[in-house]
Length: 109
Length: 115
Image (tube, rainbow over all chains, first blue to last red; front, side, top):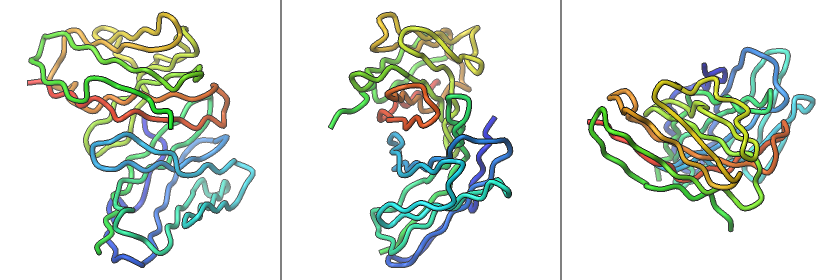
């Protein structure tokens, strides 16, 4: 079963705007990861946040984790048309990843 | 940059036929994963190998699916017989080790259509 659930399911913004995607999960984690998938391709790892971390940055990406609420958010700042893709959160525990259903982000030029 | 190789990229088959997918992980990666991704959904783990051993196949439909990684390097996933509901993207991924900080590297996938 998929334990990570993203919200919203779809998001459409203009180039230059910020995009925020949320992820909720049900059971304990060792880490939470975000991946991007361009249409019809494999997934690419973006960022990992450990369960004892609250915030992490990587370039235009900012991830937060609230273990008390079992939720995480991914912020993409100054979005570009090339950011158009599906974004998945993945719960890391028991030596494997469990993916959510993803958020489809469309960045309009 | 090293990549996970998968073939074929696309496969069309008729139901009741046998299909096989191949994956070559990044060199030195001990852990290999097969996922199934239905359109509009996230990937679901089918089987996980540590070297040549299966460490998790709890979601693998064993009546029709089989997977092997005989020499602990490349891997094959087989479906026999294929059913209409097997139409999906089959993704292979690998990671350096099985630890909990396992960043996975994915191949481009094999898109299977069962007619």
